Image (cartoon, rainbow over all chains, first blue to last red):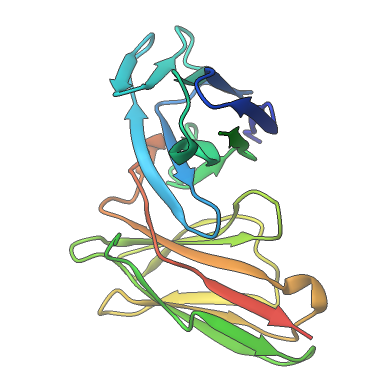
Amino acid sequence: GQQVMQIPQYQHVQEGEDFTTYCNSSTTLSNIQWYKQRPGGHPVFLIQLVKSGEVKKQKRLTFQFGEAKKNSSLHITATQTTDVGTYFCAGPVLDTNAGKSTFGDGTTLTVKP
Amino acid sequence: DSGVTQTPKHLITATGQRVTLRCSPRSGDLSVYWYQQSLDQGLQFLIQYYNGEERAKGNILERFSAQQFPDLHSELNLSSLELGDSALYFCASSVGSGGQGVGYEQYFGPGTRLTVT
């Protein structure tokens, strides 16, 4: 079955450093979503990418969808302490009528001030 | 505030017992998803309902069951509870069913923390 893998599992950075998390799928994704979960909180939807090679920006966050639609990345420029949390990617199952999204295991970001 | 509500916030119960978790989706959303998140682990998809019907099944144990009612709220029933069932249970909702591989953004509730002692 489809599996969405995320790396790294953990990332510790100094405030002001950049951060990148990668998401790789074993199958082609029709689209991919990114979520952020703050410590003690619930996942919050950040963005959805649909087109091959798509790049979207939200302030210091840059999201990319690979040309083959099998991978994606989230890059944060100049991290701040407010960026702390776990970032998940999620890709829907493509080959069936099921609408479930397969979530990656997440990348937990800690930022040292 | 995502607009998704879950009750109760916390639940402490003993092994072998049965509990029911409740979720009300955002206004206008027809899909409800249930996820389990154990300590320091990712989100394990359990089950999805769309407009009252089961849409997709994930890693849901036979001891667990769910349903979505005509008013679109959903309940997750967990029975014969074991220590390993202790986790955060999230409900999420989306406007569409996600058929044909189309993913819809999901809005998560605050979760129910279940502790089995």
